[in-house]
Image (cartoon, rainbow, N blue to C red):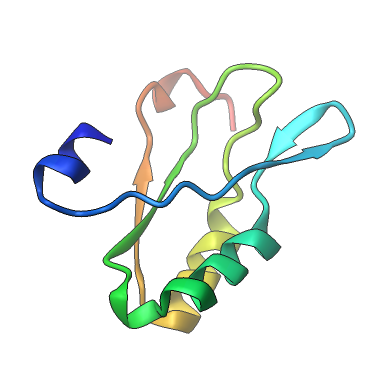
Length: 86
């Protein structure tokens, strides 16, 4: 977040959603946010693969497809990824 601000950019956080007892990526809200801000004005979408319960990893495969369909870069934060079993 600090690096984004330091670059003079604005970070728009897309809220997550509750799915059963897990907090997960809200792809519908992400699509709405892309439409709201215009994909031509979005530098990248940042997702993460490592989270702590009850947050699940972002749905990176589906986000990647969404980004490709709007020609938006997709940055995946894989910090602590070696600790993941999947």
